[in-house]
Amino acid sequence: MYAFCFTIPYGFILAIGGLIGFLSAGSKISLMAGLGCGGAIMFLGQLSIKNYKKGINYTLYNAITFLITAVVTVMMGKRYFDTNKLMPGGVTFVLSLIMAMFLAYRIVAPLPVKKSSE
Image 1 (cartoon, rainbow, N blue to C red):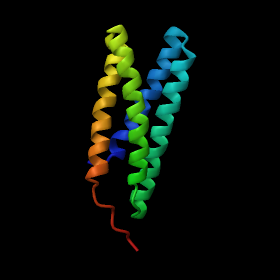
Image 2 (cartoon, rainbow, N blue to C red):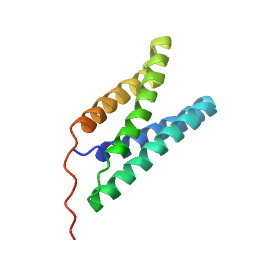
Image 3 (cartoon, rainbow, N blue to C red):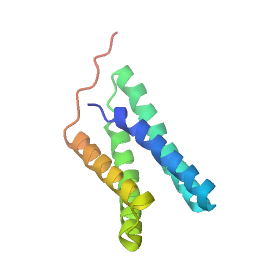
C-alpha cells in the first residue's frame, strides 16, 4: 500500500482532533498543533499523489511526513504517560506510532514509482 493512502486520512484525523480540542477545552495550542501538523501531512500526501501520477519519486515527502509524525508520537506519548488518559493522548499516541512505523517501512522499502504514460 502506498503511504499517501494513509497520510491524508491521518492528517485529517489530527486536524479534526485539534479542532475538537479547541472546541471542547478552548485549547489554542491543540488547535494550532492539530491543524498545523494535520494540514502539513495532508499537503505532503497530496504532493506525493501528484508525483506518483507523474512517475516522480516521492520518498522525500514520506520522510518529511515521518518526521512530523515522529514529533506527534513523542508529544502525545509524553502526554499519555503523564496523564494516563486514553483520550486524546493514548489514542493519538498509538495511531501516530503505527503511522510512524509504516512510514519508516515505506522509506526503507518504497514501492515502485508509477510508469509514466508518455
